[in-house]
Image (tube, rainbow, N blue to C red; front, side, top):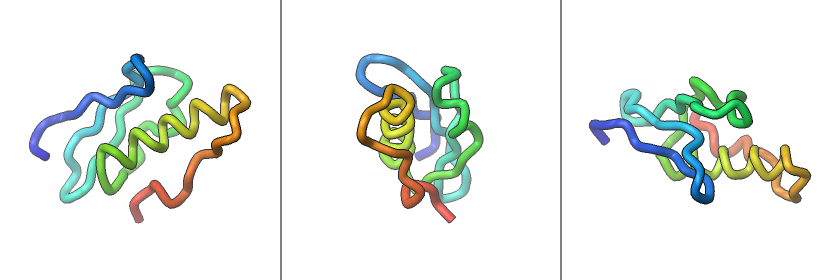
Length: 72
């Protein structure tokens, strides 16, 4: 990946990911996912799943943020 990629949950843009070596760094653009800002993920899809899980957890859903989505 050489460009930034928009991260959407449902129809709402919540952030972008930018290349960071062979991983991607999340840049939050919505307050509900601010906890993910500057986190490094293995892929754009892993970042999208983490954002979705965080939003569901904040809305009282059954999903919880996945610690395994974060790249070491």
